[in-house]
Amino acid sequence: MANAVSSIVDQYGRPIRRELLTREVAGPRIGGVRSPISGYPADGLNPIRLANILRAADAGDPLRFFELAELIEERDLHYAGVLGTRKRSVAQLDIQVDAADDSAEAMAHADWIEAGLKRDTLQEELFDMLDAIGKGISFAEIVWDTSEGDWTIKGLPWRDPRWFRFDRNDGTTPLLIGSYDADGVSQTNLPVTPSGESLLEPMKFVVTAIKAKSGLPVRAGLARLIAWAWMFKAFTQRDWAIFSQTFGQPVRVGKYPAGSTESDKNTLFNAVANIAGDCAAIIPESMLIEFIESKNVGQGADLYEKRSDWLDRQISKAVLGQTATTDAIAGGHAVGQEHRQVQEDIERSDAKAMSAVLNRDLVRPWIDLQFGKQKLYPRLRIGRPEDKDVKLTVESAVKLIPMGLQVESSYFNDLLGIPVPPAGAAVLKAPAGPVAAGSFGDQPADMPALNAFQRMREVADPVAALADQAEQLCGPGTDALVDEVRAVVEHAASLQQVRDELLKLKPRIAERNLAGLMRMARVMANLTGRANIPDA
Image 1: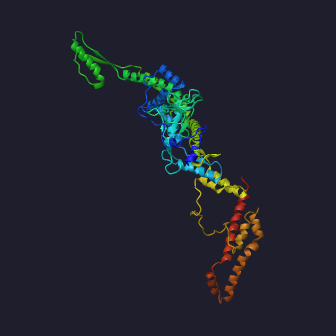
Image 2: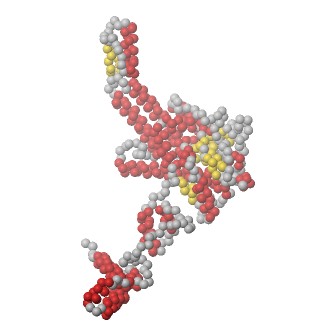
Image 3: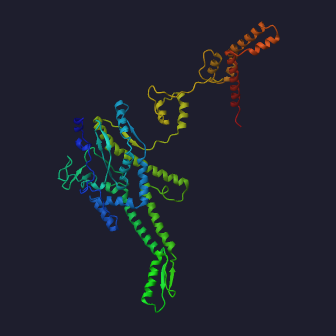
């Protein structure tokens, strides 16, 4: 296993080191450059500071931008809600792994990946990977486990994007900071820059980039678009709070008579100042307090609310592509359905992007480590199952299979969600019941009348065919009935004895065939007559 692993290289031709694959190399370190303690650039944010933060990110220092993106998500409830909706809608989707081809080896590879992904923490890990929707990029470290002799995933912990930089030559290649330990020894076999940045270890990271717009990863996330709207909304909310505090209560004016002493004035001022909080005060009888209410408080509050709601709608459009599923607006059911379809389009796009990332950074390295290099690899797909009209499909198959349509039975197992039973398993079967008169099932060989009648079911005019073959079909039954009656008459001594013996007779197979044949003939004649009645 060790020799096989040492010969494996990543997509860039870089060899891997087993000792680095099975331990964490990008975790936080208190006192180091990868500190879990974040800054707060959103405090006192203004247009000049925001512009400087964005310019620094473009120039290769995205630290403050990533901190700001996290704070925006923390402080804006609407943005956190719509962004969380978008991330969770993909994180909880079904995951399917398709084999590279129909060979047994390819099927085994697909089963290995599918079994390895059945982890309780996978949905949470996918949610963290989808942090790229907001920040433009996200990182998850792959911690491999070889304790049982196979390559399995121990965990996919999220790594703070603040601990990464981008190569200044292209602006897209991610670099990990803090590649030296406390003694200044490199923790990687890759080249390290003088500032302690290195390329990511091969087969150690899932790097997710989901773009809201074309451009560099640090400029393609939703947080870049939302930052300005969030800042203006913060200004509006601050002014709204000041307005509410100032005009939410009436202005208190205290009046004192001429000649009042300083002590009287102080008493009146304390009463006016404290009346808002205490809602109670005492003043001399000669003094007066008036409450003056602003006439435009309602109009002013509406202005702030409308502006905040408008900015929220713009954020909804940026994140979900629509507003009907997040804001109570008029439009009716049809508009709501249309907007929901837009959201589903975005969901499919995110799911396909996430599938491509996992196939590149997780599935392919996993197969290489476990089975060695392959020509073709299994493919992972994230998405909702396609809506199919099961009833229409089954009814169509019932009609088309007799005409030559070839369908694998496993197709209908997949369609109905019923697994194919293993060999030797107990399976349900149709219950065996008595054959009803007139049925078209397989008949015993000793029922010639019904067998002949079954052969007539596909003729053009079954009534005419039945009439033509009446003697052949009815002969055995009528002959048997005549023979039974003749035997009774020949052996009876009186009419009373004939009557008693006939009542004791039980119909045999021939007579039952005749009775069943007559009932079916009557039904067919009835249906044929109805079919020949012209439509009104």
